[in-house]
Structures are given as C-alpha cells and as structure tokens.
Image 1: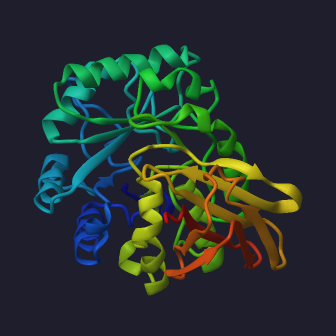
Image 2: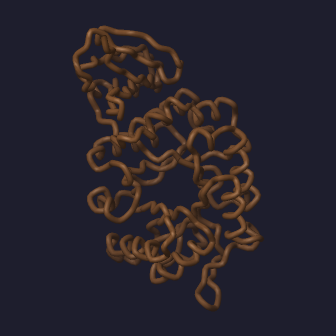
Image 3: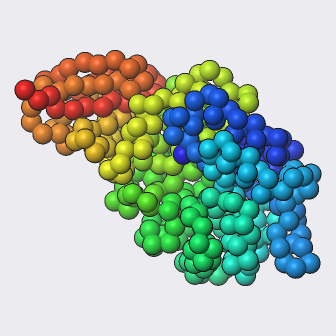
Length: 357
C-alpha cells in the first residue's frame, strides 16, 4: 500500500521533490498512514538522462535538487518508506529515456540501498530482447546483495506469464499492460487478473497496476468498484492521484478501513469468480477469520439485482449469517441468501460470516 506519481503526473513538470514530500505529508495528516499506506514511490523521470563519468545514476537536478537520499530521509521521518523506478533495459520508458539498469544491476541496486530506498519498480522497456527471467532474476540477486530489505516490483506487463516464474523472483508482478483512467481499461484488467488467483499469496502478489481513483476519468461509483475489485483481488493498493488536489469523496474511498481490511487480510487469498452470468459478477475471497468478502459487481450500464448464497461462496451451513456492507457500514442478517440491487457499474462489497449459536 502506498502512492506512485505516474498516473497523475507521468513525466510532466509537476513531478518533483516538492510534490513527493507534499504527498508524504498528506498520507500522514489525512489518516492514510494509519489506514496502512506506507510507500511513497517515484516513477520514471526522476533521473538525469546521462550517467555520471563513473557510471552512477544522477538524480534530475531540477526535479530533485537535494537528491534522492534527502527525499528518502524526509519520507522516513514521517514513518513512511520510499520507492524508486528503473527499467530492465538500456533506457526507461519515457521518450527521452533515462538510464536503465541492464548491465548496471549491482551498481544501481547499491545506489538505491545507499540512498535508503525501500521499494524498486523494475519496468520492461528497451530490453534488447534479453530473456525476461534472466533480466529480472539478475536484479533480484543485486537487490539481495545490498543487504537492505527492498520490495521488488516486477513490471513486465504480463508478457512472459510472470505469475508462473516470478513468485521466486519478486514480491509482486504486473499481470497486464498499463491501466488508463477509464471504465473499459479498468474492466479489461479485472477480467485478465481474476483468473490468476491461484498464483497469489503472502509475499507474492498479482499486480493489476496502480489505482486511478480520483483522477477524473470515472465516476465515484466506478471508482468504488475499482477499489472494491482491487481489494477482493488482494492487489497492491498504490494511490495514483495527486492527493494535494483530491476531493473528500476520493479520500473516503481510499481510506475505507473495512475495504482495506479485505485487501490486507493476512490469509492472503485472491478472490475467485463464483458467477459472472450476464455481467452480474459474484467474486468471493476467503478471509483469515473464516468469513468471506463477497463483491457483487454490476458490469452493465443499468441497475441490477445480483444474488448468490452463503453456500456458493464457500461458507459452512448455519442457521443464519451476518452480512456487513463495507461501503454503507451497515449490518444485516440472512438465512443464506446474499443479494443487493447494484447501480450501473457499481459494486456492493459485503463481508459475510456464519452466525454461531
């Protein structure tokens, strides 16, 4: 859980030291740190386009005049962690192209560790066709050699089925191409990521990309679906909006502790599809306490009733069940039916548990 600037700034002039430190401030003051958000991640374009004469990475002197180590110290002083970005190729993905780490893995990893970096996102551009497993494994070994605990995010876009080999290489791996801030993009990613549930678990996660919540291309109803679905899929929750401009509705979505608890459940199960007939989705996630998180997701453009049963989502037989609505923060009881009228593009997210006598 954390923040990454890419979805709101990309390589625009708004991405700089002041933004990063301002976001860190807001994560603390708006209660997001208390909600579990920890990482403040720099994406592409933090670096100068040329290495130093000794082959070292150089922070962009305009964007980061005090350097990355100073930013890391600022973030750490807030009780947060700093992430950074590079590519498993000669250059990064931006058109200008910052230095990639291919052939410089051990030197770059050492620099990251010396700066106090806690998370590395490793992209896939300009890779010269070198075998993906080899490229990503080399950086894994380089990061381990630093002796610093660093979360390793494999951003290989799902091209070489990383879910089949990345659990032994990184902590999370992208399963798709980049998300965009619109309904068709988000929906497409959900449909690609859901079948990969068997590959996820504690310490190794399917990553359907960063959140777009708050960036303006979807409605708040659609953003609640986005956040609900990422949570029931046990996905990394990386805020992708500029919190300095965020609305109260955006903070309410990102800070919903009951939904976050679904995402962060220690059992580490990714939700699986129970039914998807006619765009009425039922997705169930087994929870550590024996309950089930159940997403009733309406893909269609009109309100619909979506129903399932306690038995269908894997709960044991019981005389009654407690249904907790995680967006409305209300509770009800049922003999076993789980149902809701769900608005167009909406999601009802329920936590359902068997009642004990």
